[in-house]
Image (cartoon, rainbow, N blue to C red; front, side, top):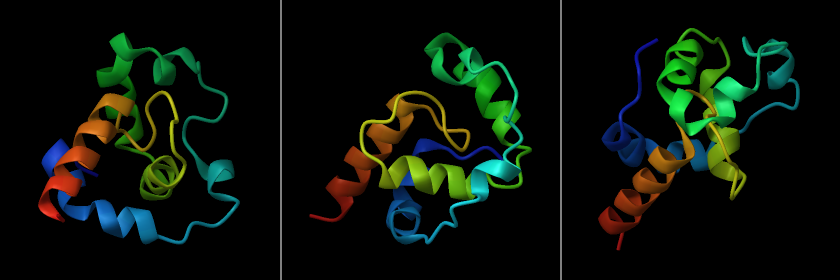
Length: 95
């Protein structure tokens, strides 16, 4: 899987907002048992992004982060600052 840019996310934001995700997606996540500091430490966001790019449930994880307000850290390979920027771009496009 490729890395999602802020503009890619903004363009597809509504799809992630509406994506139905199953409750068991976390059981399939590549990050299970990994050091959570990688995903919550802003300085390690690039490392988390690369790690997440190889995960089979990345889209569900990203959708979860978009559907769940105020989540800190990296989900689906996208850090919270990037998600916030994408949301602002999305809102600007859909006025």
